Amino acid sequence: MDRIKYFQIPFFAVVMGLSGLAIAYQKAHHIFAFPKFIYECLLFLSSILFLVILYFYAKKAVLFFEEVIKDFFHPIRINFFAAFSISLLLLSIAFYSYYPIISIPLWYFGTLLHLFMTFYVVSFWIRHNFEITHTNPVWFIPIVGNVLVPVIGVDLLPKEVSLYFFSVGIFFWILLSTIIFYRVIFHHQMAQKFIPTLFIFIAPPAVGFISYIKILNSFDFTANILLSIALFFAILLFFMGKSFLNLKFFISWWAFTFPLDAIAIAFMVAFQITHNTIYAIFGVGFLAIATVVIGYVSFQTVKNILYKEICIEE
Image (cartoon, rainbow, N blue to C red; front, top):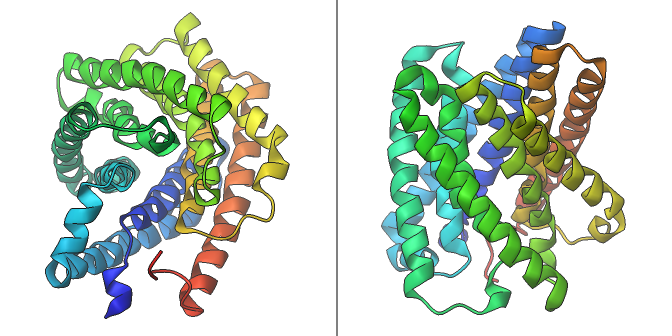
């Protein structure tokens, strides 16, 4: 019962990582004829895990509602609530070409929920006093979801709706990047459990590139800028590899995963449009890295669950 009390909202990042990988393998199946069963297995697994995580967090809400309220008003944990709506959006994308009857309701519900979370979280930031050390890349989570909306939103609603979500996401990405870089460079190092969240820097430009292509269907100068920024952060973080060695396991390790999925998809989309071999190499390369990383993080997650080192009081 105590472990339910400390069940963490960041568990939805597991769904983000696995559903993102499912989408990446779906794209690889369409472009490079990768086996379809890999995508189907990952889609099934991420869907089941979404329901399991939702069940346990709902159980926590029933039994320990005050803990959920504390999370919802916590300066850092509040941002993870948007991982729930992002999980819905990613599952809707993963199901879209496979089973649209599931995908479309998930997209509408995820979009409306994320719209609420964006307004709530931004107003929360404005209404409360924060220290600069409260900021970290987790703050991107309520924003990244906005640039996910157009991926299938352009097919479901007028283009102006997708442009709205894209514009909001890009605006706050630029704004928060400045603030978080200032915090990272000029203040004390982040707590160890937040070091993996540096990988989140890859996600906004990578997902922004995918959405930009979906909205305008044009690989132009702006698209190149977004893809290049995503690649810069990916190389930078691999260059800083020593910083990620010997980290104690936290559920925040799942922050490594979705950004790697996103940049792999972005390069495969770039190859699909341009047929430039270098994009194919980057796309398959990042897909391989994402697969290895997610496999390792999954192993560590299962091991720590079995050893009862997750869902304990901090």
